[in-house]
Image 1 (spheres, rainbow, N blue to C red):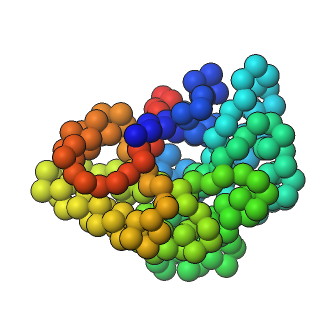
Image 2 (spheres, rainbow, N blue to C red):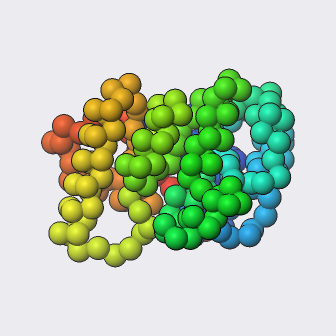
Length: 221
């Protein structure tokens, strides 16, 4: 089982991290909402940081897939030349509620647009991991040929033990459904902290759930 960190620290980036510099200074809760925070040019900052990394290539990175100003062909070619081999959609719009999501679709800000971007990246020779929040997201990603999914448990809120159990049982049912749809899919569970990841592993150590690992947020504050 693989443990992957989502990090904004270029010095800690390795083969087991997803590098996302726009998250610098944000905690896990803020990271969830970063797609709606006008904090800078996420993809430009990514290329700038990667260009400075001379001694070690960074294999996995996160893209703001809904950036309206990117030329995808040029971006993917630049990333490949810089050593990147896998991309994911973060920060993401997967948390937008239904009514807001419909409005944002008009300006190409939606999970579906993000998955389309990842699919385009795959056609350019890159691998892709898609952050998803729902079964609908998972089906859409699978339909575009994406075979690596990161299941997000939802915005971080305080939950009772009973509510936590209910949440994760629903997530696990979704994962089982996705695996039944596409047996070759690799699924990771996102966690807001290493402590939450450890708690989940302990709670479900005897589970028959077939996941490939965890993606854990590495706090940068």
